[in-house]
Each structure stands twice: as structure tokens, then as C-alpha cells.
Length: 555
Image (cartoon, rainbow, N blue to C red; front, side, top):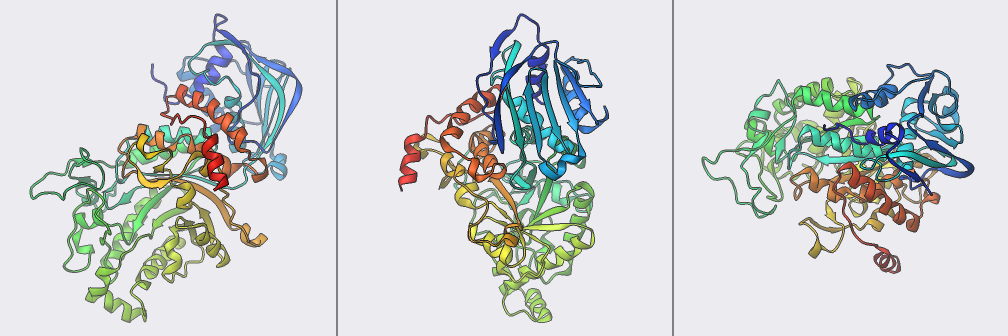
């Protein structure tokens, strides 16, 4: 039987396997991200088939209870529930009063001879406490039967450093099926990441169903197949060559993924790229481009891309509003990412309609049309109760959308500039957070972008820029790991590029900077490779990086 979410096999095997299984004493804990405080205590608790589950102040149909119990029932297990915590019990307790000390995502976990007790002010906090509990079990418990697991006594107090702990996945360059997206969400949940940035549109494909513009899917979701050659070496499509490579998510798929993410306390942030990176749009609706332009769905890295919506054509704005209306119906998030990066305004320079728009708006530079696009969309979404997130180029084009969130990718300095201008910011700089870069010697690795981010480099990232005032620091929402998929055409390869560097960034986003420790993290990483392999993830198995660490630090 296949299990939709294999991490719950941990709880099943640890609690309820037959006595013929192995017995193990856990010697120490290897938790990623590192908790705020972990205090070793006297005594221990032994998990056996007699251990019970108890939920206090949570209805049995609450998301947290259902997340645990429904998964267990799919594995043909019906654990006995008790209403009041007793000896030999694993208890999850919701206490509103804890929010003042632990915040909305924090938890307290105790292992004592009577059992395991998890407390939080919200179900999100209990969920994260549960993820920590799973990591306290033996790393191979997903594949080995244990009849007894002895956990050493401890008290953990934990809460995140930043509210935005993101993971970005590009599905435009290569389409990943729904089951792969769910596997990615499971991975995020393991490491307490809570924002899934879903890059749904770009030059190489439109990946979301839009009823009002069906050609986006009939045409824009498909391109000529060139997967038999390395990215960047493709030849253009030939006349009459049929587009067969691609796909898109139906509205039912989107609803399924959003619900799956919500069960894991993950917010899904859709990205609808505008006004550039629009080859797929203009292949479907060429009338939205400047006069005299023609584009096919891009099949590779033809750079720079000049596919851009016509700023002087009112139909471009109507198109965006129509698309975003449907996107807002699908996604409950308060945020919509609108891209706004790498806009090459060559077409605008020579387009009579765009030049007329500039005169109408009294704009001096053609690049200001990008700011007008962003402001127009931001104002429309704001009236609908939504906020835009955009790449940091929005700071350069004269936007006045002050409630926008700036996602800083070109440098940490861009985030510093954003918060000083009054914007909220998310840190995702290429030098630390672009996990499509090489992670080891390129001679030994799959083809990737020509950059290098080792595990220690990722771990050295601090999402809080230096030199900020307390008010400015309050506008830094957190950080995000980005994975672009030009060189990654399946999720197994994506996992290899993500892991274990995603673990390092997760600790950067959650853990107080003073609690981070590279040698300790290295030891934990070896432990987590066993866990990840047991879950079926394709983790990069790089030997000890201590020599590389010394070299980088000395450099």
C-alpha cells in the first residue's frame, strides 16, 4: 500500500507496532531547525504499543486532530483516545494563554516519565511541536519496526525568529504533477516552512487553469519538446512542429493542493508574472503585445526575453484584471506575487501606443511604465483585500504601491533599501538562497546554474540585514529558498538540489542567530540524511564539508 504522507509512518511504528520489533534508546536529539531552548531533564519516557494519544481543548474534527488521526486510519490504525492526560500518554494541549510567551507558532514540549506533552496557543504551534516530536524518534523508524523507543527527558521551548519562512518552486520551466507538489509540501512541513511560493507562469509555460482565457491553457501551457538536450542549447521550434511538452493545474488541482497545504499550516502564494516574462501569454493572445511582435511559448533560455505586455493597450490591463479575479477566487492567501522582474522595455521604446501612454501619464522614462503596471495591479488587488509581493526591481521603476512587499533577490542591500523606504521585505538573495546553483564540485554534479552555494554557505545566511533601526527590522518578514528549474525537469532532481541545503535555510529562518552552530548542524545533517532517505527523498550525500568550511571561513 502506498501512503500519501509517509512521515506519519513514524508515529504508527513508534506507538503501535508489535512486540516483535526492535527496541532502541535514543541517546540525543537532532532537531532541525534548532529550537530556541532545549533543556535536558532527568528520567525518560518509553513509547510502546500501549501508549495513547490525548487532545486537550481541541475538538476531534479540528484540523490538527484530523491531520494525525486520519493519517493513522489510512494505515489501518485506530488508536484509543482518552479525554484527560494520564500516565503513558502523548498529549497535545491548546492553551490560548501561551500566545503572549510563545507567539502564534511557538510550542512547549516536555518528555517526562509519564509521557510526552506538547502545549501551544494555536493549532499551528501544536503542529510544529508534533514535527519536533517526529524528529526525536529514531531516524530509520519509517522503515524499521520498533516495539519500544526510549526518549530521554527534556523540556523544549520553541518559536520562530521570522513569520515568513518560504520555499519557492518554479513549475513553468518544467511542470511537476500534483503528487510532487504535495511531496514538496510534506518536506516544507517537516522543517517548519510556512509559505509556498508557487511560480505558475513564465515564458516557458502557463500552469494554471483560467476559464476566461482558455487559450492560456490550450496554447500557453505547451511547448515543443527539447528535453533531450541540455538547457540553453535548444534550437527554435520548426514550422509545423507540434507543442507536446507541458501541462497545467486545473482548478480542482489547485483546490486540492491548497487544502493539503492548509492541513500543514502552509500558505500558498501564487505568482502571476507581469508585465515581462510573457512569451506564453503572447503566444496565446498575441494582441496583448506591442504591434508587430510575435512570440511562441519559449522552449529554452533565449536571453534576454523581450516578451512583454503592451503598456499602451487597455486590453492588457483588462486581461490582467480578469486573470487575477480568477486567481483570487482560487487562492485564499492575502498575498499575490506579481513578479515584475527582468523587464526589458525595448518593445515599449518603439510602440506608438506605449509612447502615447507615457505622454498621457507624463512619464519621462520608458521604465516608468513598469511602475505604472505594478501600481495599477496593486491598486486593483488592494481594493479586493489583497497585497502584492514583487521582486526587488519594483524599487527601480517608480512604483508608489507602499503596501507592497519587496522580495529581495539581487542582493541583501535591496532589502535594506526597501525597509528604509517603508516597505516590508523578504530576503532571498542569490548568493545564499538560490538552490539551483551548484552545491559541490561541478565536475561531480548534475548540470546546474553557474553559481556555487555550499551547505555551509547556505547555513551562514542571516535574513536580517545589518545596520537597521528597530522599526526597520520589524519590516523584515523573513527569508525564502528559491528553486528555479531550467536544469531540473523532475522532482527527484529538485529534491537533490534542495536537500540538505533547504534544512540549513530552514534553521536560518526559524532559529535565533545565537543558537546556530555549524559543527552541531553538520552532525544533525548526517542524522537527517537517514530520515530523508527513509521518507523517500533524494538527498545529496556530500561527505564531510569541514575542510571546505575551513577554506571558506579563512577566505
